[in-house]
Image (cartoon, rainbow, N blue to C red):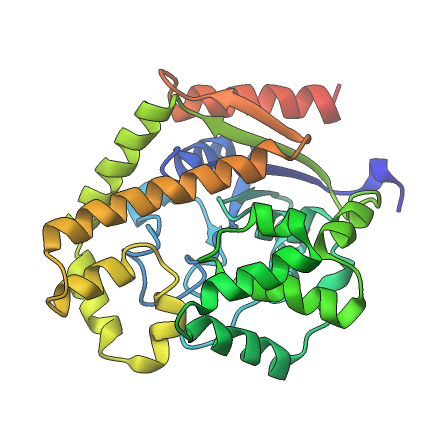
Amino acid sequence: MSKAQKPILPVIAGPTASGKTACAVALCRQIDGEVISADSMQVYRDMDVLSAMPTPQEMDGVPHHLLRCVDPSEKYTADAYREAAKTCVADVIARGRVPVLCGGTGLYIDAVTRPMSFSQRSDEAMHAALLALAEEPGGRRRLHDMLREVDPESAARLHVNDVRRVSRAIEIYRLTGVTQTEHTRLDRQREGDYREIIFALSWPREALYARIDARVDDMLRAGLVDEVRALMADAQRHPTAAQAIGYKEIAAALRGEISMADAVRWTKQATRNLAKRQLTWFRRDSRVIWLEAEGESAESLALKMKDMIDARFHA
């Protein structure tokens, strides 16, 4: 298939709490689209508050896909997401509508829009051993140091506490003899399956932080503490739930280890740190078109997106 024949795929990315969902819904209204989520936490059931799952009111009747489709006890990989997302894209297109990929998980967006040759290979025993090392005292730092020795660029990109991705990068090198950084570089030289156009929403730092703080407060009012308490009661769900910002903080407060006020404060700070990592990821992607969101409505931003889509693909 020539590039001109490949499906058009608008993507709305950016940091958490930047207004991606509202823009995606507004864009879908304008182009007869459906949203395909690219959020690594919103794929899980029973974590609506922790994952800031869009409410029916926020979805406003626009179909959303890949929400609440995996049990928290299950392992869900970028490979699994890619296959599910591509199936959704094909289904939406087959029904004469436009798929709009929306989310803040850069790895998921890359899994759909870029070739990822290395990701098919895995070794469960090796991966489990690396994760077990991370659970030992000082293990996360040792794991990160191991990655720095073989792939310093990935180590610089990944936080020491991002155990899952740090261990995966080590696993990739051990299985293939080639670093994740080099695999990514080679993959970016190949064409993907879509004609993607990627937008990201930009906010002044303090404005974004204020939005993050407000979102955490909204999550508390929506039942965050009760949701964490329910997940704590099911140990099988801890590995996934513990990755969601807010879980370990609220869980520590429920165990009496810290105050609830500290748990809330640390949750807000952890969310700000996530936003910084997301911004770093998307700023490294030369495909991204940044749109200033402050002072703009979702509808006005969506109209700008539609105009750029039309100019690029329908001129």
